[in-house]
Image (cartoon, rainbow, N blue to C red):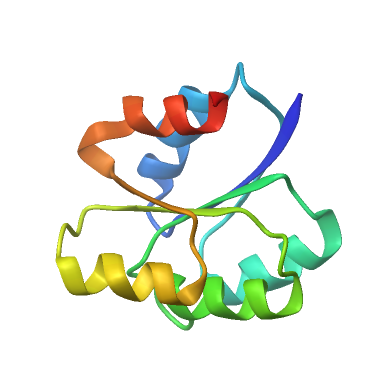
Length: 114
């Protein structure tokens, strides 16, 4: 079974994401901002990171870039409500291997299972 890190500043959304992947992953670690994500990733080295973009302190794109530069094999999927082409491009440039909209979480499950 895979391990996951959910990085999302909205507690309700974190719970929803955890519920969606609970049968796919154990353990599932959670944190609320990008700075915390760096520390949790370093300590836990999860198989996958589900990363929000808009967060206080350190946003998800910056956190993705920092995790990927320290751990090139990290697998990070951006999970966001923003569907702009420039953000998709920025996510790719930061090193994310996927970009899933929050209204289409079935796609997230499919990506994690493939």
